[in-house]
Image (cartoon, rainbow over all chains, first blue to last red; front, side, top):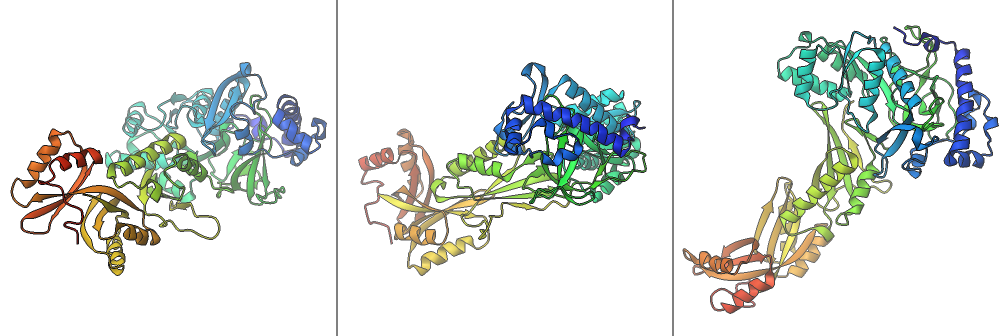
Length: 432
Length: 142
């Protein structure tokens, strides 16, 4: 079912008219209500009147994660706090999270785009949707939650983890849709196998998977093991959260909710706009958000846009599965991790010089992070308990900063390879 | 007597210990005692060598994490109950021992390397029982 046929099947010129009108409003809003945007537009010699349609989009300055960091916590908001009804946050590059704020209308719009996404995936109001994304500051859980309610389906707000209980509820409640990260879906499948529970004994038929990159191979594996249709959903908190785009049942690219979020593809180095169909960095401008609109936000995700009409009948532009990043961000168990965050933890602890190496493996179905840290002379203690306590301190500190657990391994000085240029900080052995 | 012990950080990898002993041997340094404290990932090699400063310098040059620590050398009669007598004394005085290891270099005497939390306090106790335990400077080394 197409939830909002008028929009989702609009002609290109109709869509551009909607986008243009909304973009003009958004540019006015940010210019008049937010100093950071106003200053950046003034630097380019722009006034709101210069943006007359979606074709003027490329005149606007980019917004980056650094801008959000500079505005921490609420500096990018364009409404008074009295109108902000919720905040979410994701991990930032320097330990401080990236904060986003939503007005009541923003939350309604978010529910709408998630509802459209669920409808694309073939979910309907008779479904029972188990939301196994984390609830909390992360947008995954609550995003899927309100979209499911808005659709009229039944939501099981179980949140992440607690695998045995997840499986129990799937059995007893007759869950038909599971929403979680794709790696967790595989972990669920493995656990069910160990418990001798066959997918045929469950009612599961659709999975809504996102928050981390996953391949077509992984899709095949999940579909075979859980006997479901595995649908890719995309989103980032800076734009709204999950529901920025989603696959339909034809699984041929994710339809972007472009009446709310206008996508562009740019060359990650020259920053020039790329012609339709070319691969490059994905950039989003929100055109209906009130609390924290974002203009030309550089997602750092690499993909391409497909403007042909889809077999499902929707005309919404589709984006391909993301094919890597134009920065060094890693997504580990759904959490955004920048190597620089680890560096700052190491620097903070005077005992270690930041010579480290992150090795990421996929063991069974879960990501495991090994952090090799060189033991420098200034903190090498002759006592085991001191070294063990250093390791524990590091483990705890990284856990609290990054939100993921890592295995810290102390290694001899100079064992981590140095290269003339940029030090190799990350080895990603995951086959995804 | 108080001596400098050389400690080396070692990853649990084949050949690392060999490398240390080779380097010291090539430099003409003699080891009179050593022990390894190990965990699942790494170990600490502790050495009593003829020239600890030189040993440190050589190992450092070869990219090892090295440290010297002051430890106490004491002797104990090489017979049943010999060590117990000394430990009784330390316990009575409430001395906490971080680690210790021992070697016997003759039929009558065993030598003990001690790392107490409070080095000076421990030395004072041994000074008061000079004849019984304390190794005189230069004795039992090489």
